[in-house]
Image 1 (spheres, rainbow, N blue to C red):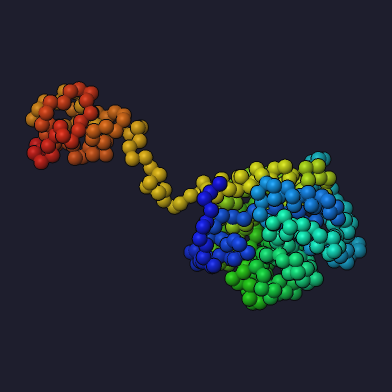
Image 2 (image 1 turned 120 degrees about the vertical axis):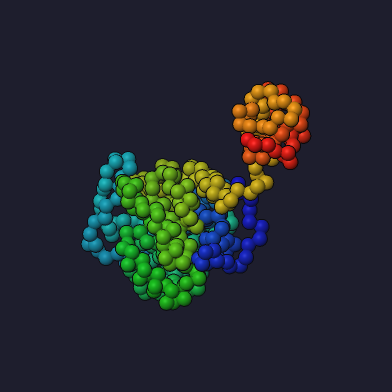
Length: 373
């Protein structure tokens, strides 16, 4: 693992982009990206499954739990139409009535509170997506460190206003939205005071979308345009996007988390099987470590690497001879005069005989007495 940050300021700005304070962490700037494994409401009221996922997060070294507050069926009208999603086992899209999907994933608040309490008892920090003001009140009551506007609600001004006014750090997911909708949502949030607490999530489409539709360059662009940290809501079916996200400056990476034998359902095709969680955390950590510094510290370079060259005599050089190109060659290792000193050596005078193949040393020459080359 990378060395930890032992001293962190309460708030800082990097290239004009403020960091967001999130409990024990800072999001953005020179700070490692946070990983938010998202159990959402995939567990479908199976609290034991939710508890197992939470335990696995803690065992793998995770520090955050991402969830959702979808607590009432009335959030979806009857006859709302059908929704399609990818069935990885069949390699095809399936569809069903949208209200059926919502009903299957509704978790009553009293059940969800037990899940959040278990996360707290396990030592995890909680971030929650909300769909209404009651869900926002619940998030505050259970001590969520941040509240997320899911992509489906990027046009929900009343909810964005309420979350922005909550004084909690705020995440806006930008999936399936036009750029002008992102600008508008960010404007609403800032009008209600969320500016210094705002994080934007880039959210590419899930499988089977081609990689050409991921547009990961949006992350640094949005960070610059909106002057806030940007993260990735990873909808790729594997782990390939994690390193790219870190390289492009993602401050937060969120990815769905399901049990290994999860049944086909909406969003499951791009969720991470819990057995691969530790692998994902390792990839993120190693990717962040690999970014390193803008300039490699001099102390990390060996003083005299064996695979650098010195200057040697191509032929015998007589005492008193002015040294010219035809008398010189180069060889490993860098003993005597290094190859970088060639300009100083040309035109110098040998003060002792130098044998063919011998490395030339400063004690062998006089640079004060130089002749014509």
